Amino acid sequence: MPQTNTPPQHFSELGLHSCLQESLRALQYETATPIQAGTIPPLLAGQDVIGLAQTGTGKTAAFALPVLAGLDVKLRRPQGLVLCPTRELALQVAEAFRSYGRGMPGLRVVGIFGGADMRQQLKSLREGAHIVVATPGRLLDHIERRSIDLNQITTAVLDEADEMLRMGFIDDVDTILAKTPKTRRVALFSATMPQRIREIASKHLNNPAEISVAATASTNENIEQCYWLAKGASKLEALKRLLAFEDTDGVIVFTRTRESTAAVAEQLRQVGLKAASLNGDMDQKARIRTVNDLKRGGLDILVATDVAARGLDVDRVTHVINYDVPFDEEAYVHRIGRTGRAGRRGKAILFVAPRERRMLRNIERLTRQQIPEIRLPSPLAIDAKRREALADRIKQALAEPTQPELEDVVDQLCIDAQCDYRSVALALASLIHAPDNSSSRGAQHPSRQSVERREEAAETKAKAPNRRERRQALQGKKEGKQPKDLGEARPLKDHPDVPMERFRVAVGRKHGVKAGELVGAIANEAGIEGQFIGTINILEDCSTVDLPEGMPKATLRHLKKTRVKGMNLAMNRVA
Image: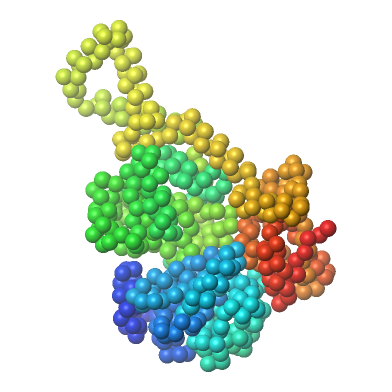
């Protein structure tokens, strides 16, 4: 496949509609990446495309913009179809379409994936959709229900095709493409091109333009990067503890949604931190005012969506905290680039949920460096840090000229309280060190006791069954099942208190199935996190897998029809 050496191009040079260019300007996109410059023109011309590019090179805009350019918004039927290997990627791609299409009144984008309410998806499809972003298994469900019509599809996109192959979905992709019109254009994006992917391309693409682009993202050497594996404490608690421990000046906390920026900022303000949110719902004047407050020191913490990742230049930002992992790895590079500016040192901390480890590996591949794991600072470490900071403040005050008028105040205190100067000094230090008083930055640091109480509560919550498990247990009770004693349950590595039961699936060694394919299919289609999937035994004609007890009937029915290696799992409980 030829290597593309497309020179940087402005989006205005690619033939996009004016409304799309306005959306890109609002998002502060100026120059197209090589994969965008190489694929947008042929897609706009109606040609099929194969894009060989790593995640994080800007693939989403490369196919989303041409799809939007070819839409007839008056026709309320699916015209663009994007297949993704995971629901997380499907969510990100759907949100990208909405962002790029903000200037297209009436645009409807629908996400279809496992682990979400089928009734809501049916309702959205009945109301009409222009673009459908789907995982293969759930889309096949809708095709079988005849709840989706693919006859008007003008563009079909396969995003991360090699990942779909790895997860066992590629045969489903073959089936789905066969149900789209022969006249549609196809864009296939993949980091690698295994033989099976080449077969799919040969079968469904017509004389495609081939574009190959290597990832070139790099990070500033002045930025120290690390990640925290989000378990054992809530992310909000972890954020507060890190802010109490780290030597910060300005901080940007990145979240995925507008709603979470406001919620996290409010929680930080409640403990005395000078925090504010920044997102796309704010008008331009309010956003400028908020950024200026951060520059001047009126704010110390900005909780923002990726709208702040591009073009935000504040020298005093010492830390970037990725509260949520960005779906687009290139966005991670832009985010952490907000620190370590003007030759200063910076630090980037990434919160990674157990099921997001694959996204972490993608970031490491893109940045070509390993990101080390850190542990949260202990309550003792936080308290020691506070005492050290207090000592530094007192030393600084001692080095400055004293205020003679305060001498009379202290002398009178000693007389009234019948104490010495040491007792007064200790009382003043206690006031400064107390948890209900602000630090020099205006931030309240949690006391050792309060941190310990919250840590204990977080650990208790982590060990307790979560809402899904409680719902599953209740469903099992309604079906006449008695939950197992947690003490008798087969222990999981990360969740020792989750009772398990065994299921049989109708694919085995002779079908070429691998354990990772079963994990990927079950996690994606049933919404069960990977760490809740227990032992998998691959047998000759079938396999067994241990899953949390009390699976709802609807979920089991869906998994029966989930396809791996071209076959339905036909999942059933083992008696």
